[in-house]
Amino acid sequence: MKIGFDNEKYLKIQSEHIKERISQFDGKLYLELGGKLFDDYHASRVLPGFQPDSKLRMFQKISDSIEI
Image (tube, rainbow, N blue to C red):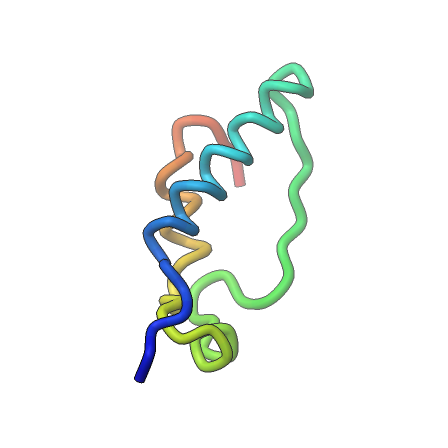
């Protein structure tokens, strides 16, 4: 199967963009996510290469900047 989605690139770009948006709003940003946070198997089926725990891993990358 051809991998059409670079999961590591996604995590890097999303994390950087969220941190940038947080800085634009005095350190506070309300962020709403669609889909499942821990086990998004639908996204992993339709995006070959997307890992089911990608959203959680992205939050772990920016954990020093967020509250949940």
